[in-house]
Image 1 (cartoon, helix red, strand yellow):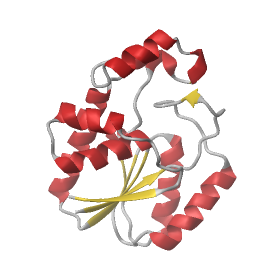
Image 2 (cartoon, one colour):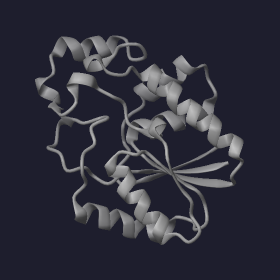
Image 3 (cartoon, helix red, strand yellow):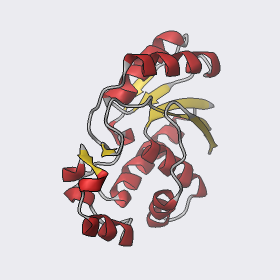
Length: 184
């Protein structure tokens, strides 16, 4: 199965803000630019899956209208990581000791008391398992950089903790509105 992973448009938040699971908006011009770009490149008639967070859901809804015969499914397992009390805080305002603790235990540490990377990996893996059972040739997934990194890491079919660490340690170079293609 070919998965076309699409990162949501740039959210309307101050640069340097931790906004994982927060349901932040996207500026209309950002949405229009990404939508126009994707209309020309995404295949029609394939199922669309999306995180229910606004920055993904609005784009996915628009694309489902743009791409004939595309089914749209929202799945909370595609949401970005929950950073607990770190959400909507400037990264520089988060205690250095907390960030260091997370860096020392990427798989198990719960930043801000939220979700750890291993828990996120488990829910993304469960989504992927269900999707693979549907046996589509191609599917489009509108989601977040963390989710894209995990789906990419899951290609290796390593044990889940190793997959989580691989994704957490991978460089974050996924631009807003970018697509990443992975094959399973």
